[in-house]
Image 1 (cartoon, rainbow, N blue to C red):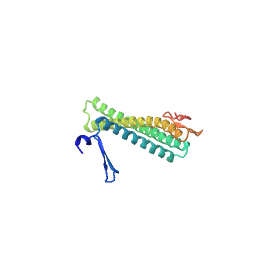
Image 2: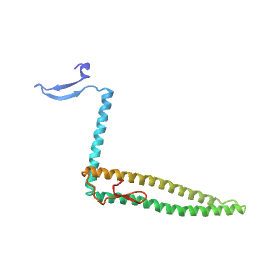
Image 3: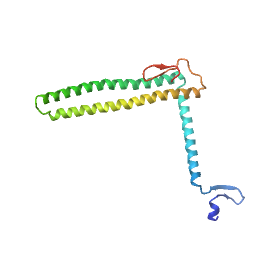
Image 4: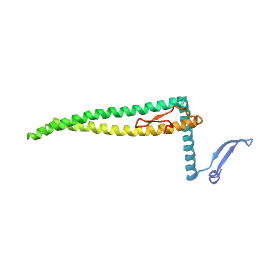
Length: 180
């Protein structure tokens, strides 16, 4: 086959005239991009179908789904509260160290290196706890938003029949019967 003819694609046939293989032609960049977009969309659709099936298999009822969501949200809220309590203790410890350093300075003495090091370590612990609380709060906000959309998706997959007692906790601890 001449190279110019091969660019458009061709069929290989056997001695009986049957096509045994089709060879595609050279694709343009636009065709390649369109093929990639189709493959990506097909993969996303397959992933969504798998996730939908898993959601339905994991939670036979809406009540079980909302219960699991509420447990996850409550667990995040409790982790934040526990870290806040711990951070208050760390802040008290930092205040004590700063008071200790102030006493040295008031006496005209230099602050011992170990006190300065302890102050810096305490500040680093507090910084880490604040970052962790911020990260976990974002996770809590996301879980709350995801719970509402997941509940709506579950209802759509189940045919739109909600259980009357379904509720999803909000970050404030209140519950919503509609899941929003």
